[in-house]
Amino acid sequence: MENIKPGGPNILITGTPGTGKSTLGLELSQRTGLKYVNVGELAKQEQLYEGYDEVYQCPILNEDQVIDELEDQMSNGGNIVDYHGCEFFPERWYDIVFVLRTDNAALYERLEHRGYTGKKLDDNIQCEIFQTILEEARNSYKHEIVHELPSNTPEDLEDNLDKIIAWIEHWKSTH
Ligand SMILES: Nc1ncnc2c1ncn2[C@@H]1O[C@H](COP(=O)(O)OP(=O)(O)O)[C@@H](O)[C@H]1O
Image 1 (cartoon, rainbow, N blue to C red):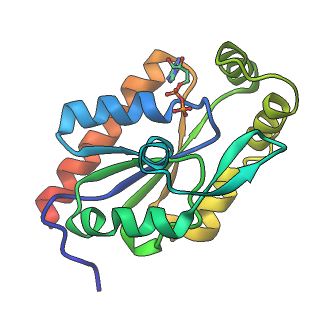
Image 2 (image 1 turned 90 degrees about the vertical axis):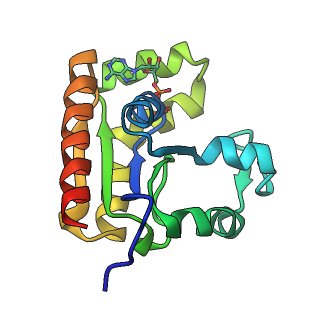
């Protein structure tokens, strides 16, 4: 049975770093009033970590702590969650999952611009080539709620916003 969420639907925006999750998530939040949750930022603020990854030179997310931290607000609904992974969240949290996709050349430029180099840059490009996050989403959620969205141009961004806003309106009229 579906949970009742007074705050509205919960939306997951996932995809390889640099595909445009925070750009889309923030704009969507502004236009809809749903709450934007950047899991990476939340972990940093609340120090939800368990150790340090020497290879990638970044802290390791404590997934259980993230789940505990978000459980109440996710049960209430009305959240747009942004993270470059999706398999550790409880499946019941999300009403819909969007996986952003970016062509290699564009993604390479965005990540280079962000200061990524060497293995970190290469691995993220490979992650996108092998559609790792899309596979992860399809393995973690019902196929019918997982949607791939192109995220290459500003026109794509506008199209994606229009589509998601229309979906939210529909969700609200049926719940
Ligand atoms: N649809 C798009 N078209 C062109 N550039 C985009 C698009 N979406 C995001 N960008 C740009 O790509 C870069 C990475 O976007 P960001 O939202 O930070 O990605 P993520 O949150 O997935 O890491 C930013 O410079 C952003 O302005």
